Length: 554
Picture 1 (cartoon, rainbow, N blue to C red):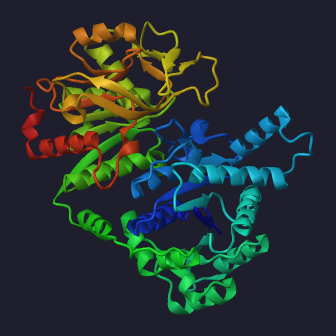
Picture 2: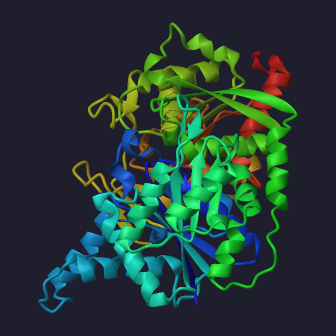
Picture 3: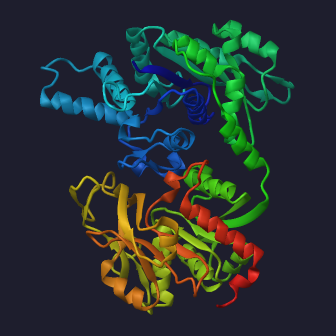
């Protein structure tokens, strides 16, 4: 029988519920348990796919094509279980499902209410995410509830899990509450009142926390832990410190040493071998003892929002670990980059242009791609970064003056990037769209495979077939591929049916390492192995650093 751990948060958001949930899952997995994680988001949007990065941060994509919360990226990086569409749902999805049932007559004319209909639907979605009564059922499902306790929008979720814990019984569910213990500099002390209040608010809803994770900038002293214990009705061993650390990979060890996994296993009556966190210790050692350093410029338009490129940042760090190097990322706002100041990129060992939408900052990205190409600096373009590289090459090498994407210039003379109207999905179904299609759910999404041309840089990295996750609406225009090839651009991977461009690159005789990929490889990177594309990219940057003459014309 699947057991459930519900993770809630209080006081303020962005305390690190995702990292805490993923860390607990990692420890339980090291005990030999099969674990999955589920994220419940209280907003009305059906999914985060059409939300601004300024509002939401990164959109993570699963193999089966779900656009999900960025916490699912943490989940996949911390445990071996792969996430699915069912591992993340929103209030919008719940209400949409209930209303569809009501329209079909499934409720037999009954008045549809928050209790029981919405709360029952939430429970059904949770069970589905945990794979209950299916081949992929797990021992423990950790359910992270977004928002903070006390918010009106998350109340149906909290009520649903309260009901669920009542139905399943005390030894089949556990509650972990994450709270904030601020340090007040003027008073020179930690204040426990916010945590006391949020624990009280949770009890008012009918939920008693089994463990309190206390976020602070320092470990919580025993006196404060004792006070929190008394006022929150949580045993002292259940009051656990989560202080700031310089790498998230220290969190599993931190929680284990304070007994969180033991407490959860006792509560859920799980008899397991002891936790083995050796690989996490090895990982932290690698993080803290790099042998080299590499400096990378990321040219994007959400550079003030670190969450917008969360998976990408982690993938670069993973590749650094595989190459025993610390990766230092400098974020450059593409809106500020132009031909007059683009030479600032010369100080970096590599240039990266990430994905994104919209016209803002495009010319700066094109400038960056051109500078990296002409000055033989290792370049990686991801999604829009590949399209930018294609536009740049078309304009300045292939002689297609004013080449552009129809996303930015609908009536341009050379639409080398354009909207694809029909494609075959992973499941074999034919998907169609037009310029007037809804933005949500009309992208090429999820894992798709394509053949890789022999003798290319891409083939050295991937072998014969590349399978990666996609999230985009515009594609390289097939009508221009021959022109680009004749001008020297290598199209090293194409989809079999529609001949959609997956990878472009330059011959290694012309440039040591220059590649653009239409997909998002960062979603499949893990701290254990990195990702072959990023590993190769960071290796190329290190080679340039060691041998600056590589910049010279071949």
